[in-house]
Length: 69
Image 1 (cartoon, rainbow, N blue to C red):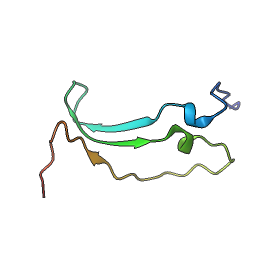
Image 2: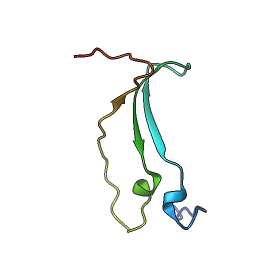
Image 3: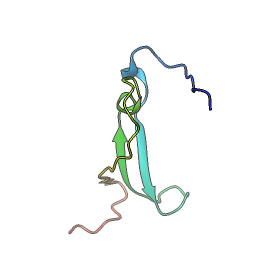
């Protein structure tokens, strides 16, 4: 497979953040938790090896779908 080439701003801080949502379906209002990541942190600019990462999600306070325990 050939290398993928993308066009991006020279300053990686200019790329929008990536937001990962946990939702129970695709309808609006179904989002439960989220994690906001800086796109620059996800870009492989140093040749690092790809590794799977776990993230702790934060409750979407506007929806308040989790117990307050």
